[in-house]
Image (cartoon, rainbow, N blue to C red; front, side):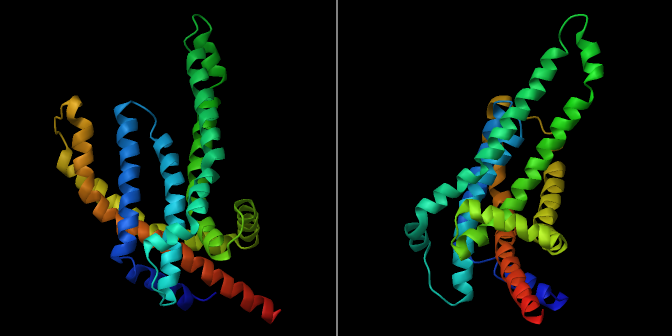
Length: 266
């Protein structure tokens, strides 16, 4: 795999990140994800729960975008309704891939709060907290690893399932085997896919900090305020998210071509 191949794939995915049809799908997914975060924040919940719910939502979104993108590369005229009608069952079922992550998150959340309850026991609570000081660190580390696992699944699995047409369990096995075989290429391409999202997130965060610094918002209107303020951010994030999914398809095609070329040479 040469730098010129990566450059071509990156540029093609970026140049096609402004297709209105695919932007509409990405925008709806981001709006729904934002709604999850707003509701969770209003209820005083953890920010990681809506993250995993959003990841489960983004999986069928990624599969749909991957199909439309690859058809566009082949100059096929495919509509959103055609893609949904032809694979709506697999699109819905793909979200279940994140069910083990959600269950693991729930178990870790329960462990963390049990630890917090133990620290409130009179006389021995603080002593237990001292001896088990590593427990919250391990729990939060595991939660962050789960979040990274979710991002990796969104990058690797949609092209495998959509383009190869294989079962989800088989797709996970193939993905793990490929990552073990060539971790450097997968890590490099994953970092490149996240570059636009990271840049957009940094710019949006800075703009939000400058805009709302010191703003006094009535708690009763905070969710509505956040929902309206989210609209321009959606327009900002949609091309970056679209690029992420499109470049994951490009990475799949690129790695496939490279592995076939290497097998022929051997």
